[in-house]
Length: 317
Ligand SMILES: NC(=O)c1ccc[n+]([C@@H]2O[C@H](COP(=O)([O-])OP(=O)(O)OC[C@H]3O[C@@H](n4cnc5c(N)ncnc54)[C@H](OP(=O)(O)O)[C@@H]3O)[C@@H](O)[C@H]2O)c1
Image (cartoon, rainbow, N blue to C red; front, side, top):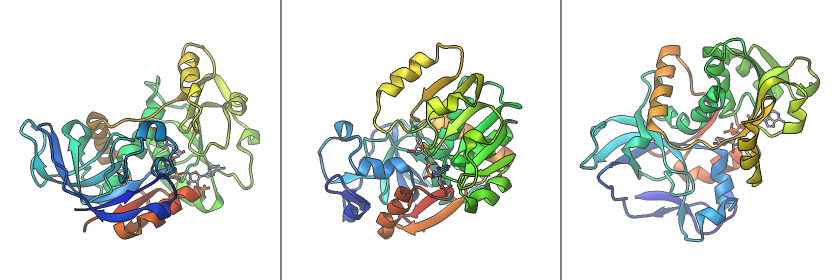
């Protein structure tokens, strides 16, 4: 099968297509014929070697975390899926990649795609939408009327935060570049700020949650605009692992917490997301798509840091 791999830690240019043996499945895994893979910023960060202490020095390495496709084969103990079903899912980050014609995935990391989403676009849901869901739901059973400041409203995670936030009844102020303001409004943001014109710290208002998808506001800055009991969600610690420890400590303090978190594969959560998509007609906004041969270009676009919605790499038609 064809797979996108790299032979060293480096840049998107280091990616190339190579023939690899088709993966073998264990009893509880399914072999997926991959339709599409989404690009997440962690893909180019892993490629650059940000987490080489965990990913090691064995090359060639595959890349890609979340995908959509059809079940090609099932392990002997797989009970929930049948050959031919359309699924989406993710692989354990840092362990293996799914940007290939086939991938072996644990049954527990898969779910059926929502009926209202096209199969290739469903690849954009598992990681980015999970991040939006987990972040919004953390320690919050009820988001009704809660005020959320979302930094990076038009990107992969951000465009799901707006849609889920609307479903959960939150009041969303989305911060983005001028070109994405209309998109954020269409998706349901209550207020939209162009970061080229307005400083979100000085724009008036205080918030119950600062959801930071672009690292442009630090925790100490966010504390100034957080209500008592509010929380700052940090998606990218930029290698400062102590922030996870601080984040745990912060959970026991009563006011203005910081929470740094990582999402992991979870088929049950993906099922819940699929239900939310169907019940509320949620959308995957695909800003750009590339064929597998142009994976390097897709990674470069993500690395530029201004993606619109999700970047999708089509593996098969
Ligand atoms: N912890 C986890 O489990 C987890 C999971 C997924 C993602 N992440 C991390 O979360 C971050 C966001 O991921 P993503 O997939 O949403 O990335 P993305 O698709 O690249 O989106 C980032 C968005 O931020 C906007 N942006 C850039 N500078 C900005 C600024 N100064 N103010 C406001 N918006 C700005 C960009 O577009 P414009 O500049 O044009 O507005 C872009 O739309 C990444 O660092 C990623 O690694 C973490």
